[in-house]
Amino acid sequence: MTVSLFIWQSEVKDSELDAQAIVNNAVYFTYLEHTRHKYFKAKGFDFIKFHEQGIDLVLTHSDIYYKNSLRSSDEFALRHLKCNTQ
Image 1 (cartoon, rainbow, N blue to C red):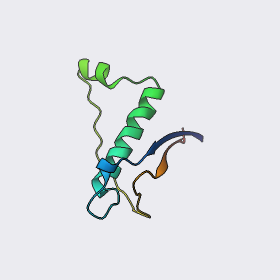
Image 2: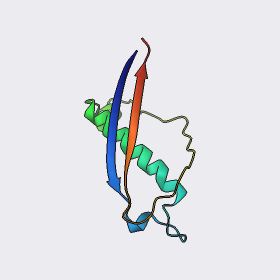
Image 3: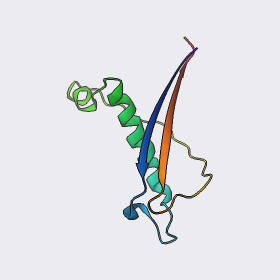
Image 4: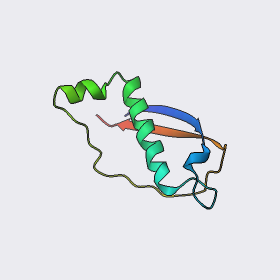
């Protein structure tokens, strides 16, 4: 089995907070999307070139299990782990 790990680090922006002063639930999906795009870019994939060739990559499912809330100026890291059994 081969495993590759990609890590994207960022800091919470005030514009991502909701009325409770924590990151809005929907923003986490944006974080995941950004990490996915950064991962593919690091692997040499170009979404625009794919689109120009008539190929559009589509995410078909995404789940989040929330553990803790992020707050203003919190630093965090998202880990993209790819496991290949072939």
